[in-house]
Amino acid sequence: MKDMKNEQWIMEKYGQICESRIPGYALVSLKIKRFRIFNRLNDRSLGDLLVEKVYEVLDNYLEEDEYIAQIHLDYYNMLMHYPEDYDEFFHRIIEMNRVIRDMPFEPFHGKIFSGMGVFPLPQTPVDFYTAQYNADICRSECPQSAFRNSHFEIYGLTYEDNNLRYFDLEQSIRPALERGDITYYLQPKVDLKTGEVTRAEALVRWIDPEKGMIPIVSFLPSLEENGLIEEVDLCIFEKICAQINQWIQKYGRKIHISVNLSRCAFDYRYFFKDYVERYDKSPCPKDCIEFELLESIVLNQVDRVKEVVSEIKDFGFSCSLDDFGSGYSSFSVLTNSDISTLKIDRSLFRNVTDSREKILLRHVLQTAQELHMKTVAEGVETQEYVEFLKELDCDYVQGYVYYRPMPPEEFEERFLIRNEKIDL
Image (cartoon, rainbow, N blue to C red; front, side, top):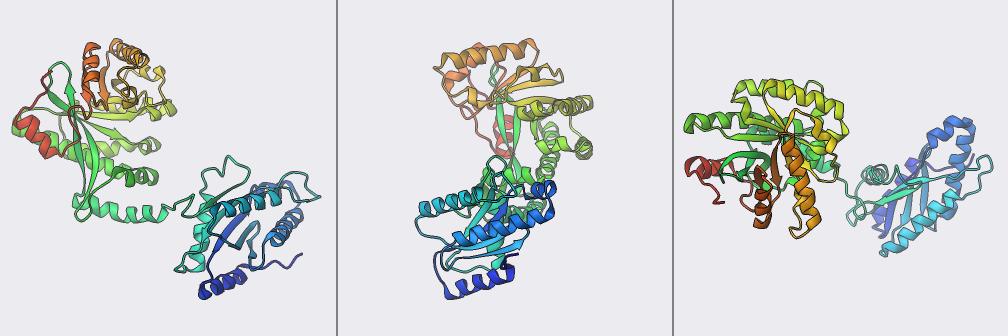
């Protein structure tokens, strides 16, 4: 077997490059794709031959002062020149993939494909294992890895690692919940028959004492990805129940508030028990609470959604279907009789002069009305749409045309104290 260099050897080469501050290098992580399957279908000795052959081909391909080592089985690290001209490096990586793919390997008549991650060495050196991790994560988290025979990503250029940011987020989310930094805003829903506001949607907000308002896009996707969104949702739900009770006691008026039910709730069969426990701490009129379900969830988990919606309705709450028309739409989801409200997505309110859009809206609203569902037009920003929706007997409008999301204190001042309403 060929004398293949190991991890310790390339780690020393990496240290020499960093210590000498030699510019223009990258650490490349490479693995043979589907190697486990190859090993299982063929003799183990044939797998060893393949590993050695790939190493030999790569070693011959590399230029002077470039290095390769076998880290483990089909996993290699390389130190390669990384020129300022990115296109030059791209083409070189593509060519290296081709060399591996088309290499002669007599015992096997198929093609050999590879996945690569590239970490350009920064001016301020990082330790070898950090560089290796960055290259590895580029390779393993490449979004095209499952769809392409060969793939590669370059750290900081085609790929950004959010894992450390997500970890920091996990460490800060619970203290933020305890301090009350994670709260909610309310976006009013305007009654298109009276102009009054007696309904609203609760939207999560993170207001850091030092950083101020943290953009939704910088934390909400990661909360959903790591499951922390469920803890946030429960916290918001508990606050909403208490807020509804407070307003009933102070003003004798019921405000109906909808809360979002995240995707992860459907993966835990007994999730609703957690909501019941929070509700029991501050029980409010059940008809004041509505759960909003994303249409994509309803379409993808039909049987599970029926169970969840039925459980929610049996307890006394109501459910609405959110984002209808956002790209997943199927009228079959409207056959669920336990869904009482249809929220039409903002994507159907883009061009008021589009006759086809108007025809579609008319049929959606007519269908919902014949099924005895309340209708909410979400994301409306122009008065022209409001007039059209009034003609079609839409029940509520939720959008910037009238109100942006606001703190509950402002909502109270405007709609419970001053009785503000829209002149329709």
